[in-house]
Image 1 (cartoon, protein in one colour):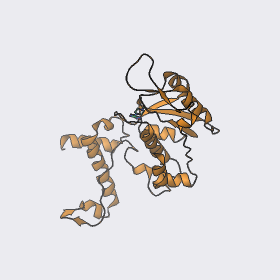
Image 2 (cartoon, rainbow, N blue to C red):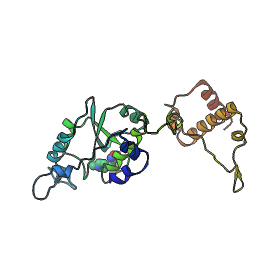
Image 3 (cartoon, helix red, strand yellow):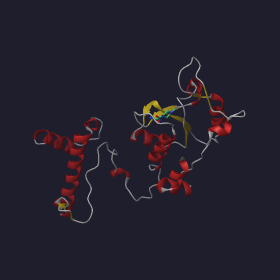
Image 4 (cartoon, helix red, strand yellow):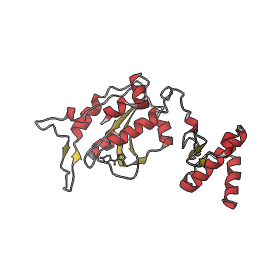
Length: 232
Ligand code: 4HQ
């Protein structure tokens, strides 16, 4: 599941160049017995299967620990919801161990003693933690210095100051009869800056008003928002 992702794109290149290091471990390699099973029936009965503690424990023990701090994260819908602030926080770690569960979950004793943190990528149910792990890898890696190679500024991306991005345009100036806003062609940088900020604020108010409560708003933003309330 990870190989396609790691062979392509920005994080794949960063891994190839050693800016981030990715080590994949297959829990099944640590299973015992003829069937190499990593799951078993839940005590007390019920549907579904639970990941056996043994193989998971041995897999975790096998991880070469980096010097510095190393964080064991379990992907699960029961975790705190992963967001950009968490991505920034994790981008300062020396090592992140992302544990991908299958089946209904892990034996609670592993959760209690070996997992530092539980993260959810959103309120829906996946068939396994792998896609969640790739989401976390992707969002965290792009914040590691050198990964984006200065091609894009982090500061301009959505969520960096807690607001959604303003609309974007590129050539041609007229496409199927629809024009690029004149201000963007005006060359007036101050006017353009203000237009972008107003569009960002409008878009956030319309689509994600919840973000306005935690966004970093300037006095100018507050004035714009007050104006929008009177004259939407
Ligand atoms: N699962 N965010 C159940 C998720 C999930 C999510 C991963 C399904 C763990 C055991 N992971 N397995 N949402 O739904 O991260």
